[in-house]
Every structure is written in C-alpha cells, then in structure tokens.
Image (cartoon, rainbow, N blue to C red):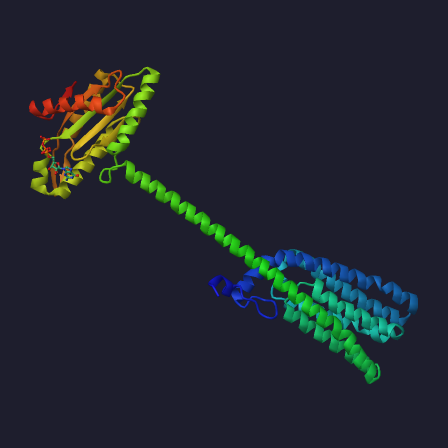
Length: 392
Ligand SMILES: Nc1nc2c(ncn2[C@@H]2O[C@H](COP(=O)(O)OP(=O)(O)OP(=O)(O)O)[C@@H](O)[C@H]2O)c(=O)[nH]1
C-alpha cells in the first residue's frame, strides 16, 4: 500500500481513517453540504406545515388541532431558522452535532401526532419510516450520527406505540417497518459516503500530481537558465565567454550593416599581470580581474558588449560607433582603469592595460578576421611600452 492509498483509507462508516484528511474533506464539502441541508430543511418544514391541512380536515378547530398546530409550527420554525442560520454560518454543520440534535428534536416534536391522531396511527408510522430514509439520503451528516438520530427516532416511535397500549405483535411489526428504512438508508448512504470520498481522494491526487509537475517544470526551467548562463558566461567575472561573444559579434555586426552604422572592436590585455599573480597570489589576481570587469561594464554604454576571452584578456564591442569615437571611449576606459586602484591584501594596487581598437571592416562577418588585426595592435602596444591605446 503506497502512502497516498494509506492516507485515503476509508472506514466501514464511509469516513477517512485519517482524522486530518476527514476534517479537510468536510471543510472542502462544507458549502455544498450546507446548501443541500438548507434545501432539505426548507422542504421538510414546508411538508410539516402542509400536513396541518389534513389535521384540520379530520380534527376541525379543536383543542387537539391547536396542540398539533403548535407542534408543527414549532418544528417548522426550528427548521427554517436553522436553514437561515446555515446561510450565514455554514461551519455549523461541519461537526454534525447540531444537525443530529435538530433531527432528534424533530422526532420528539413529531410524536404528539401519534397520540392526537390515533385515526392515522398506521399512516404516521409509515411517515416516520419515510423520515428515517430521507434523513439518510437527503440530510448531509456523518453516517454514525445519522444512525444515532435514526435509532433515537425508532426508539421514540416504539415507546409511543407501547404507551398507546398496543399489543406486542403491533410493536414487533412497527419495529420491522421502521428498521427497514434504517437499514436501507444506512447502506445506501454508506455507499454515497464512500463514492464521494473516493472522488475527493482522486481529485486531490490529481491536483497533487499537477502541482508536482508544475514544480518540476519550474525546476527544469531554472536549471536550463542556469546551464545557459554557465555555457555563455565566464564564471569569475560574469562577462560573456568567447563562444557567446562570437555569436553576439555576428548578430551586432549584421544589425549595424543593415542600419548602415559603424561597429568597432577593442581588446584589453592587462599589463604585467603575471608579476601581480606571483607577488600577491592567484586569489588576489582573481579579485583584480573581477574589479576590471565591473569597471569596464560600468564605464561603457548599455549597448556595448564586454567579454572575457580567457586569461587576462578582455574584449569590447562598440556597436553604432565610428573609429574616432571608439578611440575616445577606449582611451577614457584606459585612464579610468589607471586611476582606479583595486584593494589587494589591504593595499591599493594600480592596474593598467594595453588596448587595441579597430573598426570592423566591410566584409568581415566573422570575429576572427577583425581579432587578428586587433591582436597585432595589442602586440605593438606591448612592445611600445604598455598602458596605451593603439588604433589599427
Ligand atoms: N588570477 C588569475 N590569473 C590569471 C587568470 N587567467 C590568466 N591569469 C594569469 O595572467 C597572467 C598572464 O601573464 P602573461 O601572459 O605573461 O602576461 P603579463 O604578465 O600580463 O604580461 P604582459 O601581457 O606582457 O604585460 C598569467 O600569470 C596567468 O596565470 C585568472 O583567471 N586568474
């Protein structure tokens, strides 16, 4: 038996064995049960009043008629009042105690008919039988409580018959007449309880499976985004990696070509970074790389694209920018780097870089061709003494 089957196990009385599940079920069913009960109460009260016409026919405006009328009006008022209350407070039915008390009071108030209308005694027993059956089928309540109210009704009826001096044979006959609807009602209602709870269990299981599926889809989406991020960015600086950069270059190159604007590519190679690593350690070198990545990103326009090409080399794509403007931007970047020391091991450390910048020429659709030229510029910048911008 798996967990879910165990959780929704049913007792012989058609309730969930797990009290928390049973409680949740009753709360779930409360609005519907309250509506059903309100209809049942209104029909029940109306029938009780309607049968007063029959009393009048046979008793006339007699004392007995008035006693019966008071009983009927009391009963109907009680039922209508409860139906009205249920509209505002449907939670009254969730424990079943109020409904059961009402059923027993209903039986008590019904019994005077048996004494005051001996002419229809057999008919009255039949009506009690019908009431018992209706109680099981139309009054939503816990099966065990309905059974309790029904037994109380049968005992009351039998006591009334006995008090009326009827023979044991009549008593036994009445017992069977009343027991039959109780047994029939009990087993029919039990099946209804079981079917409704099975539907509820299935509904909950389907909901749970849906929720799990949604969570799994969400998890996969996040995983996919994370994988994509890992595949496209450099883990240390968060900048685009080489593979992604090549794709972005082609896209921006094509966009600028369509719009008839220029596009420039620049590279920055940190100066003497090896000695920084050797002196302060690899971790300090990482902090410096991160600092430079943040500085470049902060200094450039939103449309500019910064990437890390591995090691201590950065690449900068400047879409919609001519060569003169690009040189100015890159020179500003170089100066800003030179004047923004980074704190390494508690000491400010100035880092410089050699830059090379070039316009992407017509016909250069692949980054490799432009890169070759920019790389040469970088090389000559290093040879010329570093910390400078070379335009190629
Ligand atoms: N901390 C750190 N260092 C790196 C990383 N990638 C590359 N480096 C280091 O960057 C240094 C690059 O050294 P070189 O290629 O000799 O260049 P350089 O010392 O900057 O000298 P020039 O470029 O000629 O000015 C090496 O020491 C690499 O280990 C990294 O991710 N983190």
